[in-house]
Image (cartoon, rainbow, N blue to C red):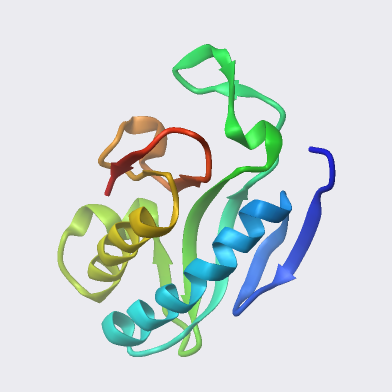
Amino acid sequence: MPAPVEATYTTAVMQPTLRTSCPMLLAWARFEPEMQRIADKRLGSRITEIRHYGSYSCRRMTGNQRRMSLHSTGEALDIAGFTTADGQHISVLDDWPRRSGSASLFLHDLAQAACRHFNVVLTPNHDRAHRDHFHIDIGPWKICKA
């Protein structure tokens, strides 16, 4: 990654500190207001913490070892969960499969919204490798598995 940026806080704390590319951080910053609107609507509280598995990781794609992952250039981000101002903990692993309740509705609405902001959105609906997180990226392909 030629010029990595680090973010500890956007509209919420990034946990751990996010190390990513400038274009990915800008894409995330454009998406966050919609994330907060969905949180207010579905959870009745704002997101104060975003738990992620990282953005930058120099590795090949899962399922296609011939291609480098967009994580290798910091153009992807894996989101595992959220915490709200009133203390709710939302987990992709635990809350996505329920398909009911405020946390699940939040995650499903969020994934649909992410498809309008990112080129690729992979959720637990995509495959088992994504059962515990959302993969979002700004790469050249267009795929929405929300």
